[in-house]
Length: 238
Image (cartoon, rainbow, N blue to C red; front, side, top):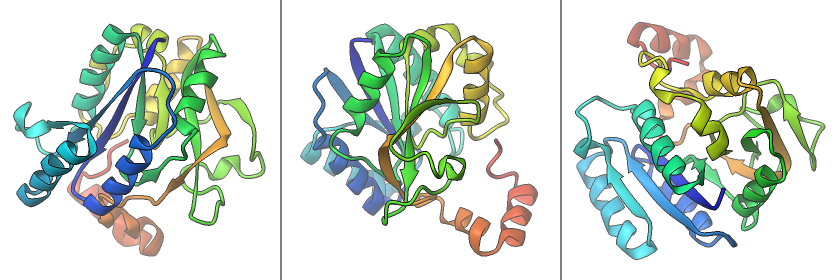
């Protein structure tokens, strides 16, 4: 692994996206890297803002509308495209979602941690709230703060590095196209292929869940309504 291919998928939510971008672009990263935002059918107004900020803040912008007319979410397309790029560049494919704020040493820390572990498929940062308490989706890691250890439970893609060695062995074209999100399937397949997934609770990142898809906040505020929308409209397929 020679470099990092850092990616943030974005669907509107410009304010939280800008926090994510500024944290990444001000990180202390010692290895070569590129940073790309994949704009998944944000509104025309927000797309124009992303184009403006791409010039000002120095990230690459890919408008998914230029690649497909498939409606958002297009996570599978992003994963498949980025897998190929990361393999070509011998790069760690590092996903940082648009509701996450990294510390200055997070991304280099994940790179170093993955490099030190030959069997690593996914190196994931634990997520915390603004007060520093471990939060969704890593509630199971509470009580293990300040550690790094292999996990059997799935790693979220809130802030996770997928190694090129793992990417070369897993065919993302075989992922189920009827799903919306793939962190569970990819995490489990990594174990099936003989790799390990590592959770870094010593490299926490702030996570403010579902900033780009506010309807999902209903999962905590009104779960009955959330599951009604999820199943009747076919949203949020994992």
